[in-house]
Length: 225
Length: 300
Image (cartoon, rainbow over all chains, first blue to last red; front, top):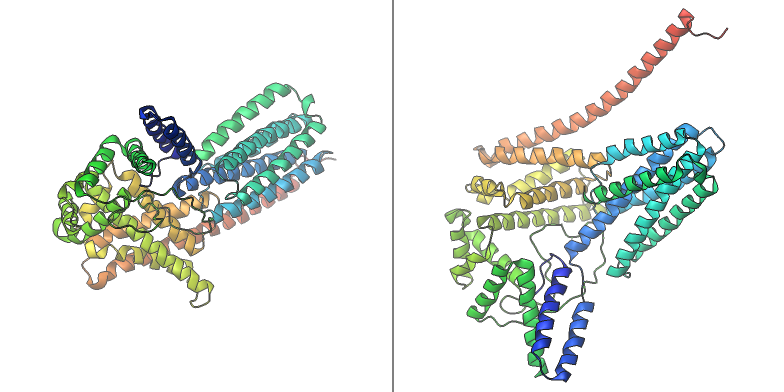
């Protein structure tokens, strides 16, 4: 009988319960050993039902799409304030890479028939306000915002990569390659931000913590809504 | 000895899965029922689905599980039993309505005890949802086929409004054989215990139609388009229920008018947008001219 698509966790738990009960009732050590081996094999042959996998992929792609869109708007806000200044080309270059990321996720959304997050208009405004607001604190403020956001995003990509590797690295090969490449580029942006005196921003650690808390909340919401 | 023990373990695992996943009552009932009927169970296989995901794969209907492996005699799984039973019950719906009696009649056709209706915790809602899911799958199949024919050049691509109208008409025509009892079905779908599933099946319909109509939007347009189409679909369904014209002509005309309204509204929104921009630029120009004429804030 096929387990219903409500999660392999329940299946594993049920398997553990039955396996433990069966083991306890056995007297012969040889049978106990083969029981343990059989149970381990059942655990290893776990899989996600198509529906659970679709939900997981949907969440991943939706939240990443929202994140790249937000990052685009943040850089747009920063350029609006600091575009003419000396740090303009640096921000422009990072913005162009983010535009490429967004294009890629637009493709993935269509390929996997994922619905985009409902809060797109909100991230549009919030991202621009965040970028412009931190840029008004000066070039160091803008770089501090970049550092905070990129660190948050890199951690988030790492979590997703870990999740997909746990599931089935072969099956999700393309998505994993995309996530790894984007994670590396976000780390580059993070390092660029640090190199341009992000740490000299006013109230750097407070600013960084607030922005990262906001990012975590945004990620949580965009995964679901 | 080891084989016997292995068989027992797998059976126990299956029943334990049913116990933990589907509710204790359902699992106990299934195992008791299967023993009572004397169905020969095949050891279940834990398949590793190795299919890669491609664009526009099977619809995301929530009520069908995927059928893998070979069909054994009898029912290989509880899921398959439910599907066959509900499909058999659909024949009796025109006579018995969407009710447990129809499911009981379906059970008799399959040589099962009528007591098997206890398997459906949502009552007639399960039957209606099964029918709706079947229709959605059929629609999805038709749209995929059309899409493929357009891709290979056997058919010309339709314009968006024509395509949407045809797709909604095709989906509503599937309801026509059951139209006498459809008001009962619609009210069953609105019950609180069925509302989530019925909403997700509606989402499935509008998403499929828009995807094959060529919508590739990835922002809030995704939501507006689908909301509008859901509104059109629901209102047309209601019109269909009390339509007495031959061949349901009135309904299809109503549908065509609603789709045209929606398309016109989208176009006029665009026009308003561009007109608004032009007006705004006109005002800015006028303000600058006035400023220069009046000599305010000139740097001499």
